[in-house]
Image (cartoon, rainbow, N blue to C red; front, side):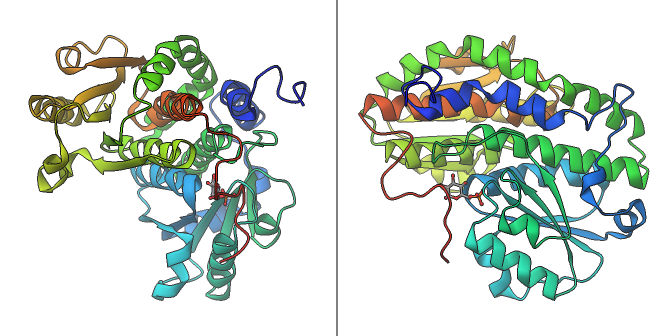
Length: 372
Ligand code: G6P
């Protein structure tokens, strides 16, 4: 009913605007004012956590993109090798697991069959499994050693939005907690990031307040055949998520590339008027990456691409090469996906609506895939 949708025509529109609240609820009670993290529900003792020698993240769809982003954060903060793999590939390749391996299964529903099978397989091999899930008491958390719930509330739209942002928050919490428990040479950085993470709900609010021009842009691209997405570092999985959303909702050909791979093939696809969305890394810390992507934008634009650039506010370097500039708040590099994903969600949703599609129930898709 209209009331359930909070006055919005579609649940997806409502779920996009609920993201600051969903994030705040997921952080609530876990981040203390002094920067200490409390994740008691993880049920793994600090001694268990100190023993971990490898992390393997398994997930499907949008949850897999959260896992890809987690890898960058976890390896940087914890210095524990971290692999990430789609759950449907995982158990068929004879992966190397033992009791010192922490498997993190990310699943909004807690019911994806591929992820569940991967969890069972990992436990049989003696690995410990931590689930990151949104649905209380669902199968994957019940079959895991520990669970960290996201508190996004029920998500009705088939395409994940608020649950993705909360999965990111949960992944950051796990990474920061591991770093805290294991002791880390980046101790100061860890405390700073915890403080910044606590402020992310406000940053997402800012994005929502300024995202309207993206709707007009999306409508103007409703007849495009293809949209390409480029990103690097954590912006690469964000680009993948932007492309997935466009496939799911607008039934359009959309593909994401790591910007550094452009010259190894994708640049041949660039032709006059082709829309290319570029997720520009924050300038903090990894400015080398920032400069490299600016030259990528220059290269594709010189070949006719219509560039849609998502960059930090005040990023003057990208402006001359951006046909469309979408500004997001400046936040630390590793946390940027929380803000850079939001315009891509709005973009795909609005473009799909312009095509007359039902964004809550896209054709051929299910909210939770309980068959292999
Ligand atoms: C389906 C949904 C996606 C979701 C994926 C994984 O494909 O349509 O939105 O990302 O399943 O679901 P899970 O519940 O395991 O996160």
